[in-house]
Length: 306
Image (cartoon, rainbow, N blue to C red; front, side):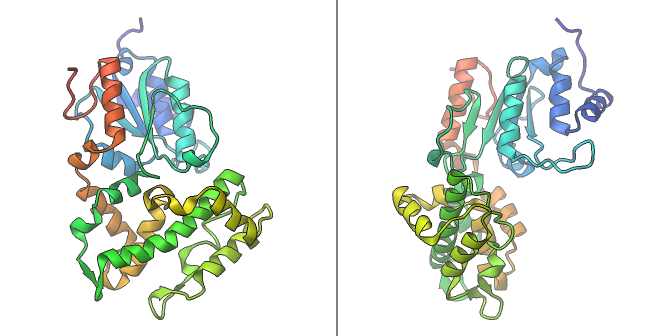
């Protein structure tokens, strides 16, 4: 049994300095302290996730919520290059034997990938990611007007989904086929949007396809894209499982440019609009409640050991 040690700032700072990442440094220190071992550590992918899930977790000293640190600076000043969920899974694997630790990650495109069964202490969003899970709950209708520049909000969203769905198809193919295409370059929305008319270019789809084909490190053809979409039956999938939340929010912000809803404003409004009742309707909530009962530990606001 370790001597009881408080998680004071100087000890944590020392651990972080040695590890190079804030969250990992905290966990490294916690595993060697009695107080750290007594807590439940909930690790999510990003600080945005912390803001949302933090509303639903017990607000006491026994439950500690941290992001995986994927965007934190390393000890050599370099940004972490691993994706959030990869760092998250590594943290769970590293500390599962020494700490009570669970993780919550975006489902991403795991249904389309052949992967080993996930960790028993790792939980996933119902939809493609947290943003799409919130959108599925109807948060946008709670703060956006019913009419957008003379067009119904539902029609605006239909246009946004049409474009981000196809972009989602390309993202899925990129992940499944390991094409390593850079979506932050020639597949950014600015290449397919007219600043003059504030609308999508007429040839947006063919241009997006051409950019994907020409800028993928591994060779891919338009015919292969079409065949992939057909083979995976992607057209039958719900938008919430195909569209990437960040894409939807970005495209929506461009469509609402005259209404001054920036991407940042939309994200913040969504966080506020998403309620505990919304969360209780998800499979993720049910999975976390099951973990509580199995481990006889409480992490959620309305939890009961019964």
